[in-house]
Length: 86
Length: 450
Image (cartoon, rainbow over all chains, first blue to last red; front, side):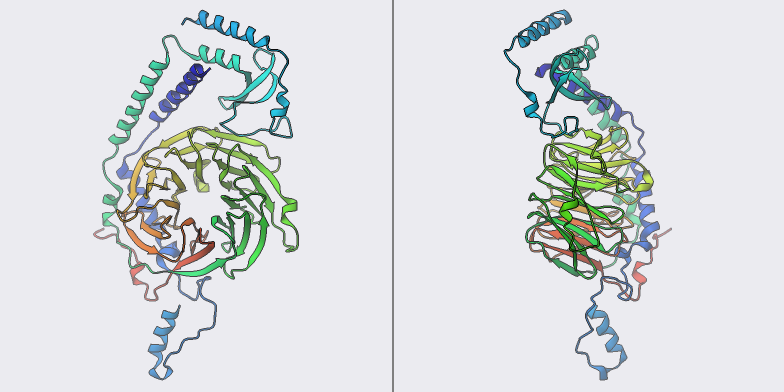
């Protein structure tokens, strides 16, 4: 009978709300400060944040370096081109 | 209507029911082959026939949970119990009034502690430098939309599932396919890698979650060793192993989540509280204990205690279905992605929403979210084929990634945080990582003025 199941459902809702209303809360400023603290403490260990150099990146492109660069122009140009190709 | 009138009415009804000619063979309605197998559901009310725990008569039974204990009462005894449960003076009207006043009280309590916004606290934090993300690998091989993916703890293997029923295990570094399984159903919406790396779990429109042990022998037919673990009464939307290979947590379109023992297939705990399909779940990082968060089509995100089945916190600020939920790495907060085109961050200790990640130009729903290892970045895949990268603390967008040719259905960061992988309805998966800068000075952090 729908009447009694409504009552049972309502009782459950009221009980759940009573439970939720009684939990301990902290201020947003404190909670936010702790979230920020965690971010900063772990920032250096986050490769997606700091980036990984090509030599250690397991996802780097594995094919042979084939790029037409002017070797005669000197070491500096070659190094820049290498970085760009990665 | 007084209690005695009510009892009289029930007595008359029970007499009229007893005079029904013949008996319907309820055994033919049983969906399970084993008579005592448990099913987790919210849609069926009577699925077994037998003696009532209360009155002892053989009748169709309602399988209900009282204080997390399963009880088999016939429908008459359930109604009697419901009437006894009412304290004097309680009617449906007083209960409704009390629920409204409690809801207002809850809002007031939450508002009292809302003294500042997260991005205001984060004003002193140095802004992120320029972000250049590059797509490193494209995994091609699925014949249809990729719906879900998961990383193995060895940081290189990936399992992915698609609409055509195929579940593929890839080596993300070499893009080789290591295993492939064809499920007997289409729309495999959930897949998960076991912590040991020795098995994968998947499910979808078959309403089940099946575990396939992975073998080193490539020629072995994986389907032969398949084990059906979970049974729901509607599609399986998400599954996840707990800290071991022995237990699986599932969420389903039937509005419930459930915890199962893999070996026996037994239901260990069920979680009722959502009023519509549950689309996603995520377990808390192991240091913070036995809780998980779930999000569903009722726009609510609920946090549950895995041992008691109790819904400990509930958040309802989204304006549409929540497609994805993910814990912040510290376990103190979680993010959600929703069809209302926003992602939101909820803090568990402050018990409220603390940030919204949205832009007027973003009008398509977010299908999947994940955090980077430090929690500073939030990667969100959207239905407009892009992935947006948000600065969690400041609330701003730091990068957009293009490349997929259809909606992005799933985004997951690898366990070591070096890359993240996205799966899409364009049948491919792509892994991306941050391009390193050799001078390195932009990533040295300082709090300005401290």
